[in-house]
Amino acid sequence: MAERLEVHYTPKHGSWLTIAEIELSVLQSQCLNRRIPDMATMKRETPAWATDRNNRKNKTDLQFSTSDARIKLKHLYPSL
Image (cartoon, rainbow, N blue to C red; front, side, top):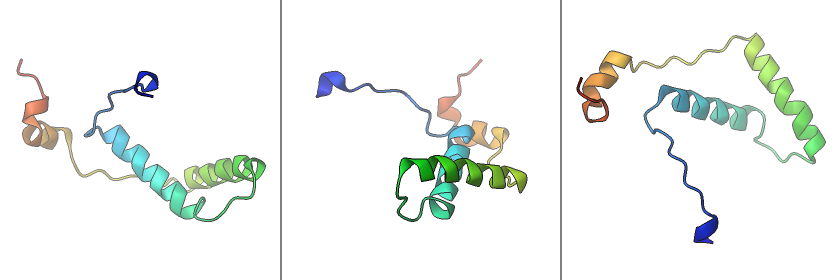
């Protein structure tokens, strides 16, 4: 089993990861919060949810700026 395991490094503090997690959470709560009977329904409803969300122009407001990150996460940034 351990031989089949592939480990991929994913930064924990990346803003893109935070946005992806937020979007998946919203998808879960708004679209996938019930039993979906079959894959055809899933393939039809998930893009419909994404289209509706994009049309509403929902935005994610991250209040952790790059300059704040450089101060708080100083150990992650190399000294130049």
